[in-house]
Length: 430
Ligand code: EPU
Image (tube, rainbow, N blue to C red):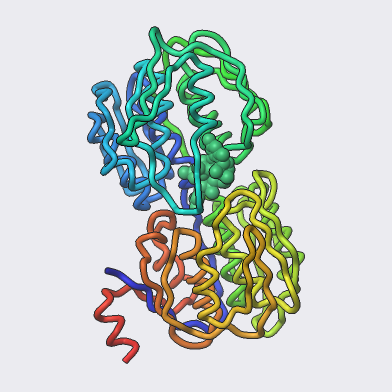
């Protein structure tokens, strides 16, 4: 098993090119199932979630050809609509998009319930409500397989989501793109990856309007064709590197980004006293290591609010800020498992349900810690970079689900980090 060994306590300087958005890629790749002809997907992040999704598509009969490390061509002409087993889909939550895509193409789907990061109960009732509104009969078998069947294909419908859900919004878009008639999703999620999926489907011939607002209209079309499509930059990866530089100190620029997508994150960094400089396609953060960050309160919300996927990373800043900060998790019941690990590094934090309170400390101290999920892993890397001394981080496979070339990118801004097998790590710590 691999570990990261990080020697922290130094400022970081330089620039980080941002990869394609994980959560856009994970909706667009299943979307390819709907298309006749070949789709060329560019700016695909090389991360394990994408590799797993491609493996699932390949096992279903899609022909996949890598043109370079971030570009694939996929032809789904020979995809078979066979039940997708749990061993395959458990690796990533986004495998639930196969239900919408298969339902849209074949009128029926059988997919095991998804896995993904454990943040407490993560129901898919809104996805099911959407599929049922589109005319499907949906059941979940004792073995945890979601079966969705229509008699004669999906039919457009008006759907009001009871909770703002990224997954349900994207799944309904996939299922409805080739429906008979028009579908309207109300109270839709507005994240940048929703817009990216709509843009991809429209490039393939779909007729989707309103993505990015809370009402999305999908006029069903007869068929979708192949296309060439480039995925948007990853808002959360960019936010992570900005936050990480603010924690360690220094001056770091994230390049190839859409600054508008980062506004809720950069606004909070500014509020804490970090300097933010925005350019057309890049954003710079600057903070001298000896200047303390200011305390703030944060509540996570659906886009354009502050993203839950940046909550653990900001917790590290709050742990170091001058004064008492309150963090409120507005999306998930249980996304604070990593706080125990942060405490081992000297953070003074208490958690009560969805609220975490941080009494800022001047310095975090190095420790051996363990990633509990993807963004928690990113937060622990940040904490290790901010702490003076050597920390080790276990379970980095979580981090590699969502951050392309993280070691290379960190080293390029001057971080002292290496990835080693666990037995070597024990030796390294003496
Ligand atoms: N919810 C329901 N019923 C549903 C669907 C969702 O009650 O049918 C609830 C969830 O339990 C949660 C809230 O609605 O409390 C929002 O969930 P959402 O459906 O928006 O989340 P998701 O689609 O499962 C995606 C990202 C997550 C990200 C969330 C929120 C992917 C593959 N995953 O999950 O990304 O946290 O949206 O923005 O797109 C990550 O990248 O680290 C990650 C966890």
